Amino acid sequence: MYKPKLGSIFSVCNQAVVSTTAGLATTFTGLAIANPSTSGVDLILKRFTCTQTAVGVAGSVGLMGGVGVAAGSLTPINRNLGSGIVAKATASAGATISTPLLIETYGCIGSVATTGYGLQRGIVVELEESIIVPPGSFLASYTTAATTNALVFSMTWEERPR
Image (cartoon, rainbow, N blue to C red; front, side, top):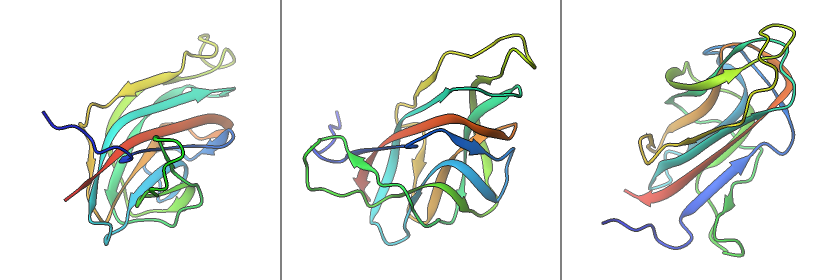
């Protein structure tokens, strides 16, 4: 059975609530990770989470991805806290990306004003290595509706040599 090398698990989280763009937009806001074409590693996804503070519209949350990378403005952390190993992946709360494809949806967002559901429980998806982001590709959060300062996302992955 494969066992990850100590210090090869990373995560990133929005540092405050973010606004999101609707659908498969190329001018994107939310949370994205990108694997530089020269990284020499695959990003093996472990977990995706989403929590909401206040969403004025009903919609779905999921992941989208594609070929291409974006500059990073967020700093991934090594889950072996105190390790000097730095992630090869970059992360951003907003970037211009190539046209993405929807990979999967995982849950709903909404508010009493539009859906009668109120705030939803946080979405925690154990991806169990079911998504691999090779060098030169990205993975980003997806929402069907635009939101304003309402959501916080996180992603956890392993960086595995090719």
